[in-house]
Amino acid sequence: MNIILGIINIIVTFSLLILVERIFKREGLYIWICMSTIVANILVCKSITLLGFTTNLGNVMFGSIFLASDIMSEKYGYEDSRKAAMLGAASQVLFMIIMALALPYVPSKVDFGQESMMTLFPVNIRIGIVSVLMYLASSLLDIQIFKKIKQRFPKFLWLRNNVSTIISSCLQNYLFTFLAFSGIYDIMTMCTAANVASVLEIIISLSGTPFIYLSKKWFFEPKKIS
Image (tube, rainbow, N blue to C red):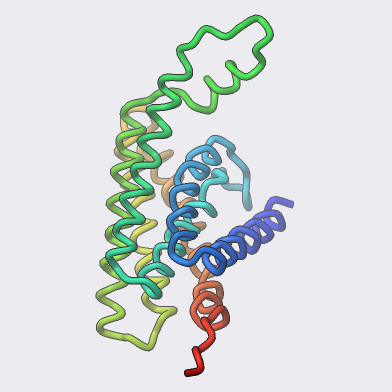
């Protein structure tokens, strides 16, 4: 069941990304990246089992961030992609600050959300800082690798899309896992978590290839007739 839901999740999420970019152009990608950085960090709170391995629901949203960044680089330029990465990091920081201010409030007797919010949005400075830094570093690395491959192999969109995303996302998985959870989990547990997440990110990246072609080729602007 989870595999079927995962396939549906990928198709719907990436389709919505393409639709948003079609309607709002580069501004839509800015919105998507900022939104996804927040949503992905919420979805990681839900663990699921796939083929006997435990993972979380944040992988598809994180994958959509890299896809959005690659579409931005391909269609609108690298400076816009860098700006989007910075806005995504800023969104994460602002969200954490706002939640840190909200959680200490003493709830009323009729409140029903405090306990759930304390579970979903605990203030962990170490994990928060590592999360923002690893997101920003991996996003900037993705943009740079995408640019270098495009300069060398300009015709192979699938190559630059997948190589940049797979390298960046896998590196992010390993660095985040070891920096955020060293001393909390043993090495074997951290390696297993990073390995599973990386395999899923590779599958998600490959699944996004048709969508970046769809964004570039199908949704085109009509030529103006003079």
